[in-house]
Image: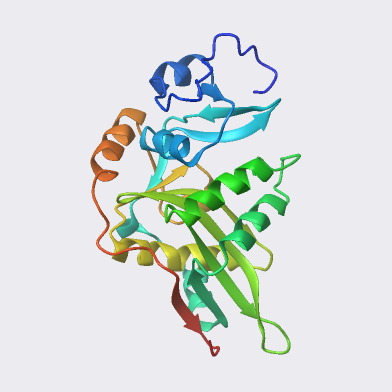
Length: 249
């Protein structure tokens, strides 16, 4: 994507938070909607409301994308496979919300990905999403395992952006077996209890499909965003102990 000609991709002015309609970009530019020289919290929130997200930075420019069809998860349709259900019942762990956002986003940036030469979560991205977290718009979920001395250590987790009743999943990591799966399996019911009705997974992967994700047309996705991002949560997503299994907390 970074090698294509960007002369016909709009460069957003610093004082303009309005994005162009992403649908022509999906058809003609592999989803590349626009470029910007900033990654402000206000621009991020404006983008997510339209189904647009930043993917990488190059030459001082941030690249904003939309993908179609869109992969989503409806919390009430979360599927927990037999093997993971057994792990959730028997493995010692704890899952928390918003206990260490900085560590989670840093770990997501540092964890190697198969087929990727590096991470899109560059330092400027970490700063921007940390600001969203400070504003109560980005949340982390942490999975902790006990070490051999019984002390809890961060084993995996995920983070994302919340607007209204939509949670936009951004990235997850696992430093130990099953840790990100456990975090996700506990996070989704918690988000549902808070009032989340739609989780944006962005791209279709076998990992997410095992949890029950599905693809929807982009028009349907945007219609859902228009409705759900305008609705308040039932209760805020605060710092919280979601679950503990076989350990003291």
